[in-house]
Length: 191
Picture (cartoon, rainbow, N blue to C red):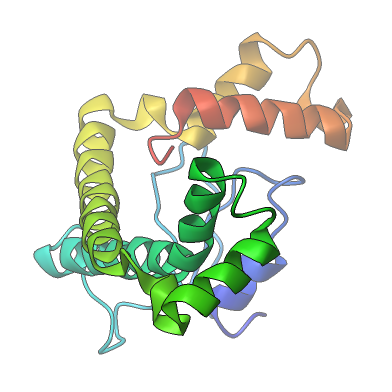
């Protein structure tokens, strides 16, 4: 019915059906009592821009994404951080954030707002590289070590079976949200 897995993912409501799997368009639906762990991604395996999950290229792209997201965003707020620090150090001279920007531009020019950008960019880029790259490495490694019992979907099933006093179908949306929230903290190797 849906032409792409992305539209299937967009149409799926995780609060009404937390245990679902994506299928390719035209693929017959299969219902089995035991669900395998499946990964969903926007890019398909046939795409030339895609890479294999868990490959060296995958980890490199995750690390590069960390460099871009952490390095660039933290460097972008260097002027604000500079003025904030000056406010803390000399509150008599810098009365407010706007006054701090005005004084800094008057004394050092616009380039003065960028003082400290290089160490900020390098430091936060390395943090992003390690955080995003190693996160993926350890997520896969520990997920494989723990096995299927520790996944989010299995945790939801177990919570409804042993903790929640009524069947899932009888739970309100807010009760289902609480169960989903708790299961996310207990059994999601992605967190």
